[in-house]
Amino acid sequence: MHLDVHSLREFYYRSQLGRAAQKGVRDRVVERWGNTRGLTIAGYGFAVPLLRPFLPVAERVIGLMPAPQGVMHWPADGANHSVLCDEARWPLANDSVDRLVLMHGLETGEHPVALLDEAHRVLAPQGRALIVVPNRGGIWARSDATPFGYGRPYSRAQIEKLLAEAGFMATAHTSALFFPPSAKRFWLRSARSLERLGRRWGLERLGGVLIIEAMRRDTIAPRGLRVSDRQPLRVLEGIPTSGAQPAWRSSRQDD
Image (cartoon, rainbow, N blue to C red):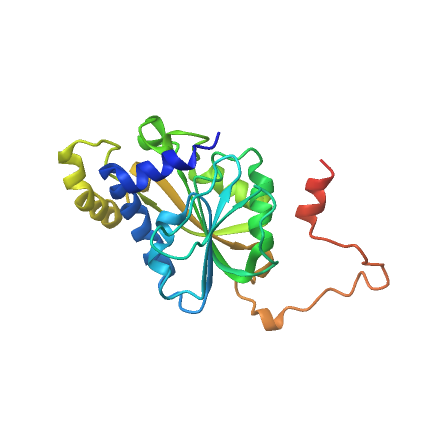
């Protein structure tokens, strides 16, 4: 089930716990993506709290919000960059997004593979996606005091398997939210220190969320072989190829 956009806005922009969570995840996204000047960036679900740092530098920033959740004007102090959309039909062209982040979208969606299929469609050949999901073994997934307590939490193996089904390959992983989902002053004051310790010690299993970076599998060259050296096999010459499509897509449509 999707949370209402008003509840998400209240958590991330009105509560101290939400602001601490926003910073904890956003810092990892900024760290991972680096310079995004001239790129097109999109976020699906309720990912807009993570996109604010990219507004001044990216060529285009788009917040995609699912219909069951609802949409809000974002950013509040500027021209609107958000749009309401269907889970599996985004108003974006093929191969048009350089950086994509999903937060509060995959774990609450009704059709996660169809959602990732749409992400695959819009992501540019060398684009990168970041999938933010509740950690199945973390304490944030066990508390309904935050949005990460709703929907399906994932282990790292589970999310990587799901990504593979949709034609993605996980290329990196990290975690965030090493402090407990508590509004008590002590924990909020300790949040930044605990985030630094979690990153330094690599305590992935203790993080409240998993952050998986993925690329389209069809654009990643096999190790040890340059893209320029790959040649198509000739054993199938003469066989009609009209209507051909990737095996991972055709097999899903036959299910």
